Image (cartoon, rainbow, N blue to C red; front, side, top):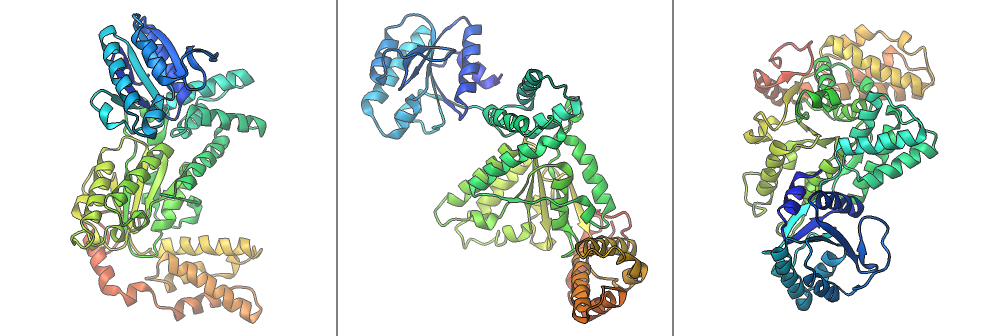
Length: 501
């Protein structure tokens, strides 16, 4: 039961503006509060007129809002008046007579302890009523509410859900209305699903539809954690943080995981990790393009950013990926944009610090010098990881991952047997994971050109022909590795050398 709505109705605020897209749930909650206080309840809509609540409405009198308000002013009994279409009528345009009738009726309701509850999705209160109306935005259902609905559906179908499946499905529904969740359960049932964790994908598909319809965020396909070579310390940490989304974590009062900042050399797997985290956690991966939120109108960019963050909270639990965050807020110290970037950066920092929704912010950065110091302090992220160039053991693992993918794609199961993995790992010292992946592709083209299967010499030739970034930009990479000493946690337990804290 929403505590603030309870407080407003029990305090008998005369005019309450209840903003929600869940009309049925809102009315059910409000009726429960009113009846617990001994108040009468009556409903009204422009199509049905005045009718009883709860239950299916039957046509009643006073379909005209002015006639309804006149009727309310004559009633002596303390009543909760649930007015379904009045907010939309008042928001559609300035209607002086209707606004005056609402103000007069609210004054009478105050004297008698009654409440006018305007239910609808319109959040624009007319200027003349701002001093009279208490605005409350009804939060979306909690995991407990989704769990109750899911348990009821399971009972109707005669299914016994394990506690783990029940919690997983209920948590996945966060951000959806009860009606949307009910539609998903109907689809799962029609498809022969057994309401297990495997059916979470149905929930994620519905969330994906919401993201695509918004235009503020991109929905990115997740990857498998098996595609990531090395980075064992980061993988272990992410596995622990996954537990933060579980019901046992809620029971012992652990906070939702906040996020991680991945800093490191280009091509070493930061973007792939973002996709792999979403895949391992079975959560939607939303990519925020801060530049794409920019608009020329004053205040429009900040408004777009707030909408994007609100959408992420609605989709939660989810992973919000901000790729190359240093470029997103480039020019923070200049005033060439009228301070838009500065205001957007401040808005995002405040949200990252204060958000209580299970949105895991995973930001990546190649250039630490471009990051403002405010972003790096604790509270914005749970941890800052440094992803260095892979060591020999990691390089061998990366070669194995990409060659195994090539073997599957080419239906060539003997490929790995034809390759000297330790030799390739030694030959590719100083190469990033992306450069090793590119060498596999280059070697495959070379083998195709000669009409022979891919083998070690093709890969060795591809590596030797292309110098790594660690040589062509050695100075900038050395600076980045020097910065990481004592400032960031190594992503690999094999880390050694100047970049290892």
